[in-house]
Image (cartoon, rainbow, N blue to C red):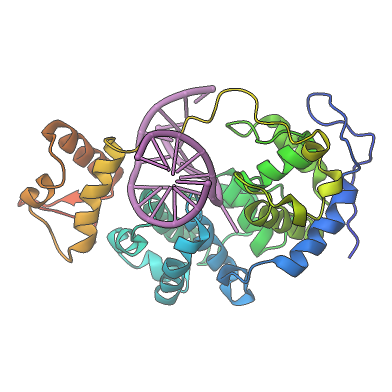
Length: 313
DNA sequence: TAACCGTGGTT
DNA sequence: TAACCAAGGTT
């Protein structure tokens, strides 16, 4: 395949810095590497379809592949089409979500399925703008579905791709905390012209970041673009500036919410308040967490005062 | 923009 | 072991 691009070596990266290498020179080696090293993931198989791609993208938001795999398989077996999921109470989605974390994603995926069933005839929309309008679908997920499921040409900027570009092109160990306009511009600049090639490029750069160009200990010895990597050329300088402030988790409302929801997930039916009161010592924080889950629609309170995952009756 | 939103494996 | 990290989205 030919990896063409609209750019030339004279293009400048956002911020005025000149690209160290011709971006075209990155396409072939990365795509070739992907051809030989891509993981055989279920959502990459043709039978997954656009719905399978969308389900996987929701589950993979901030959750590692290894933990998504079993839940994805069960989810697709149970709800092979968007309409199948839409026909269920939202609580069933939350329950099936299991311990993947960020259970609001389950609620949003259920909402997206309902919107697809109602507004799109049960088919995952191909249009990027229509994808963006679905609950839980942001900039990344819309581009990923359009690219991976439909072979369209979109800049797919996830944490892996951002890190690969930061190193290979920009010459820094890590990308900025939040995605910047400069990164989007760079991603568009590097995007191959042909949609098929662009889609392959998106998947390949993501896989490169996931398998070799990892955050902690990159495996540069096996990197297909080691010779062109701006970060390596610069001597692999250490990250500048303050360290990423990872949010502490122990003792937060999130932990309490997680404990509360775990109780409801494990129980087949409604649960009395007393069973929930047992998961956390501080009544004030417990109450706040419970209220948060209620307002998020992750749980509901019955007239008799018991709680359950959102049902249909 | 920055805080918030789970969970578990790795270093 | 505490901190970091994982195919982000919403407010």
